[in-house]
Length: 189
Image (tube, rainbow, N blue to C red; front, side):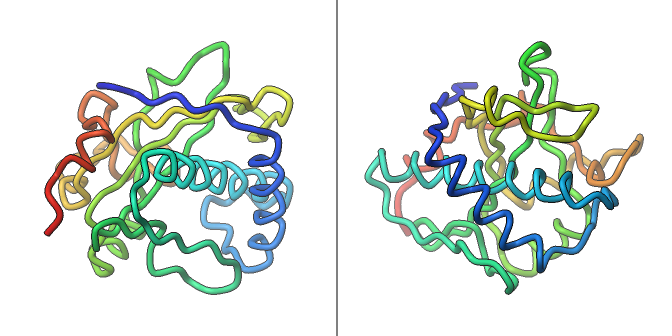
């Protein structure tokens, strides 16, 4: 697997945090965090991942559409070559790294993605996450890793029969992801 490492600037973190502050007003507490601060940080982590992927696409001169809104359900994260790409982002503790982590996908979001005709799911990891506190440490968050992608319909092959918490209905090990570089080498339809 060819991961792509991208530095996270303070400007990107700030833009993502401002967006998370707006989105929290419209977000359902699906993971059961209850505490507003933790919920904002989960949205912040996801938004950093989306902005990193946007940065990557721009650097590769890839044409794309990106939905970046608060207050309404989005149709997709990214649209590239008329293909819908969903981006999942997870934080990791620097001391443990990310290679032991998986792409986790909740059943309800998978069903929604199928209805919306998602084509791919990209997994991104960012450092600086404090697992016990469930918060992102802004001072330690300085790198994002695009771990790879999976064809969206193939997620169903990874049903997790040992579910331990919200969101791990499907559990895809990193070894089952393809390099995101391959995603754009496919011919345009």
